[in-house]
Length: 514
Image (cartoon, rainbow, N blue to C red; front, side):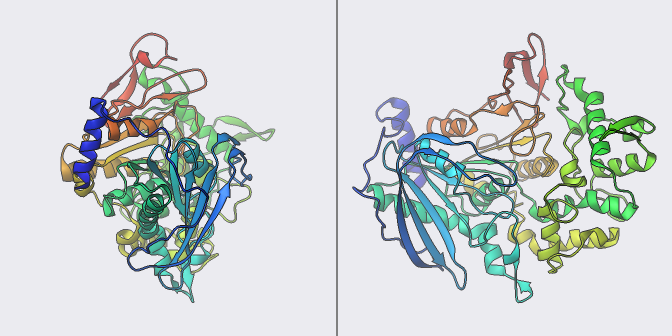
């Protein structure tokens, strides 16, 4: 029935018998609470409503970012639904614009160990004419995993919330709130997330295929059970080999790889387009002198050995690869270096996964793990948690049948979630389902870091292209992308963008090839 309804709506849109979306929608005369039916297995604890004035909205600075103000935000009603399943308390926040609602719903994803975001992404969605929804899953904030254990044992209900349940329930609740507030249903629903938010989008496609018509899930933390351990590997290598490589030397290896492989795509632009085809050997830097904090440092054999292992990725006892390593050209300092302001060695997401979920010893010094202990933990993570949070099921047939569309982009310079895992997942989906470009398209972004940033062209409007695909049937052959002074379209995997002729700053000078 849902598919037939969407088909009818799309037919009306294409024939000009209906507008793309209503220019605005009337809401209740005031920002007030509405009755909410609890999802199965949950109980509603409270429903609160707060009128937000809109205008210019500012956001507090975090340790990692300072979101710029968002201007011209319409006034909106923020309804917070608190629900429980047992002894948890989950908040679902729904933001409903008082004017300019397009009939669309946007689910907003989280990052690290945060399940959602009530800051800039939520407000931006409201400005863009969406009703927006996000949830905290009852698990506090991004790098706080104190919720993981209860009386020394795994807190399985909260892990279930974080892994799958709360995002689904937030979609159900948001659609109910919309019906009560606007006196009409959502026309189209979209998911928008990166990193953890990307994983949540894939979880929705795999487990709750009717929740969203379109899913934008970028740099997704799929294969969580593997990547959350694999990204601790650079620290394991250094501590077990007894050789810590300084940030300056790590960066020298990155620059050397870029210099060696930059021109492989036909143009020199300080980007390694295909790290997997970059044959640069870190031993080539041995004996070179570099300047670090005003001091001359000579690169050693031990430095090169560590860098090689980091790029190769974790291995088993026989030297066989367990998971893809850091891509050449990506910033190695996040996973291998020293990060000011972060406690202990290692990428915090990886270290906390091992400490709290695998070892159940918060604060454990992961630098003391031997190679064998690390490999045992890698296998334990898959064995105990792949079915819970792995988000690695390649069967997306139910999402395809529902009429859903899925777009993902991954940066080839992703320094936090190496893109090899996502590319591997995409291959598994194709092996399982055959041709999937009719509903699922993955794009690689040369030179782009985790979610955004880096020297590469940044996607300019991927959500808009997803909307075009869902509502107009216009599938994206490329994703539009740009830097401050150039354009370059992103190609669908397994194609890559290669310079052909003309101005290298202009997208038309490139072609998508295999």
